[in-house]
Length: 631
Image (cartoon, rainbow, N blue to C red):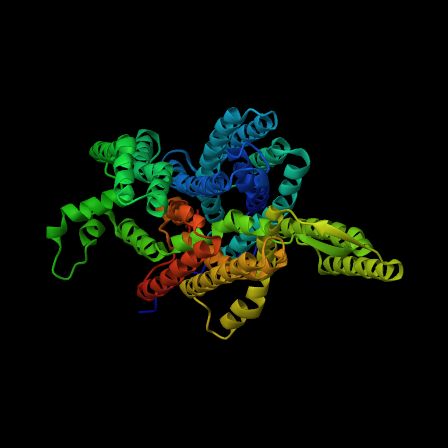
């Protein structure tokens, strides 16, 4: 008999899906809004807790306490931002769909920025209690808004692709990450300047305007997106959402009260007499017992609702398949694995979901420590920069005539070229070369004029502006890493696997905190203002290289390794790693009172240990890639 014909391979499509430009534009504006407000948050909170008094004029103990509290609030806010993705993911996957969740929660996001602007206004008029209340309300709304849409946006990117253009997924996630850092770079430079020049009201208000723009851009693409419908939706989807929200309450409790409780214990251990730790623990038990009850009662209620939901209709979610496998473990044959009963009952792909999630979560458990280090460039690294020499001299004509305007125009040209590329209308090679030649010629003319007429001026950076190095370096390192290492390795048939890249990145992150700890020791020895802030370029370079290897790779890895029904959920789990890392910083923040250098050394050691464990776990990982099906 003749051989039966094999299935035809899908036709390769090298075009980006039509919804990608709107997603990229939305993400660039949204990230500007988020990083803009975050970049000034630590400095604003320190000032708020001091009543906006000048730091040299306040009591040193009050100043130290305000810095610790500002570090805690900054990182608890970040923990909330990356906790709410779990709720947003369930809301999108189970009830409303990604598009509606992104659109409607963006309005909550805008309200949070408005509250922060109101806090800035109240602080400027001396109404400190109202400013503090408005700031906390604004941070809660922004955490809910930013966190709620976060897993949906990145999962929505992947949903636009099928087998025909799946080879573009890696590239579009790199574009996605590039535009995030494009918005972050300009936000990191602009908002500290706005804060210094016009105050917190304007500095928080401008990011709010950008968030409104982001929402509008996303709405414009409503007819271009591939929309994966929520399953099951309706009443069942609502029960799923409520159940999942109740199950996550214990983590919310830890984020909400854990840092305050930890500060009491650490302060007692550092400053109290014998028995002070036991007394602090007793006080915590009396003060926070209602939260402990809530942390137990909420998941119990969630499990009860889950039982009700299962009686209405059995689903194929993580918890239902896990419990089914537990209940029917005696039905397994001798050669069966733990999931065999669920595989026979629900089918192969559905039963693959929970073990895939557990495998990914086990590997990602060590990534939390990386995020504890990374997010400190918006808190403790700013604190370090405040004690450094922030002034530098630039050639006047070259700086004013080419560096500043050339950077802005070059960035805008690059952004336009990027958007045209993802819109499948790339700029011609000749036009791109002409633009680059024009920029270089302009620089040569400025350099000649500088040589003829001379002149120099002194510029002083703001402490928060040095963090603009991070997004700038990301935009440089991503293409450089691809061109110099990743693509040559792939051409030689020895590509670096995602988990290998992440392992290398985690060890580099440990090295970045060794560098910043050594730098802090040098600052403490030399005195304030003696060490130039550009020395922070070394730890920033290391930390950013680690970010590209861990975060860019991890986002792609989380999406492609998640079964189709759990895309947003597993991306939400990836974001939960960031929550746990920031909670760790908040818990250990009182150690800053020992010294900032000691604080950095603690995290360098934690990161090195976590990287080693991640290496061990990655060797044992066995996974599978899932992409959306055609149609």
